[in-house]
Image (cartoon, rainbow, N blue to C red; front, side, top):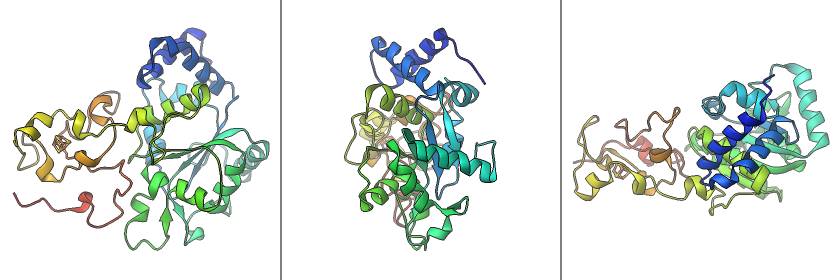
Length: 302
Ligand code: SF4
């Protein structure tokens, strides 16, 4: 297990304070939150419902802290059905003991198969039941990824599982716990780690009407886009790889809220629009749910 020094916590705290748009003076408090996570004072239970595990993989793409430091030094990840080294009944005992003790942050990745609980079963228990059981002892519940936030791809038209997002599921079961959604297909690792730290040290971050932290989802992609000047001048790309605004290739940046174009992905390397791909609106509530969503649309006639 990685043991982090105070200096390392302070360095990580300074970086996370920046990604949360906090002043440098907040760095010690953020470092303290990381320290709490590492000591197991704030355990995390990570349940997976109908998901591709892409958001777990995205979390492992965290660069500062690195995946190894994140999992062994900063986060007390008590249960995760994919990353757990324990298997079978040993793994389920860990989950059940943690639920009995309570006091954890519950993370759910994936959508809830409301009409077909048998579509997603973990340790012999439908995930629908498991989420409700785990929600009881949680101090806060974080829906990671668009599937968990609003149904996502599993909720596409004609899916027989009746997939819905975690907030809707909890509300319909009268679970009155603080809920945060971190949509994205996948969610950015900064959004996940930053939200967890904020919950621990500063409480629930300011949220919009879809439970999304405003610090990450407060502005439209369009308003922070490096191709915005092209949009204003009506200089539109006609083919992939062209210069110019990607609107006529199906870009939904004008209606999508996230900070991808300024935060960038893969350790600050790039984002969809910078690479010449239109924004497909993966943080949107309606992402992939209806066949008419831009993700599926043929190029507009130009
Ligand atoms: Fe807006 Fe998309 Fe054009 Fe960027 S590429 S200016 S987000 S329409």
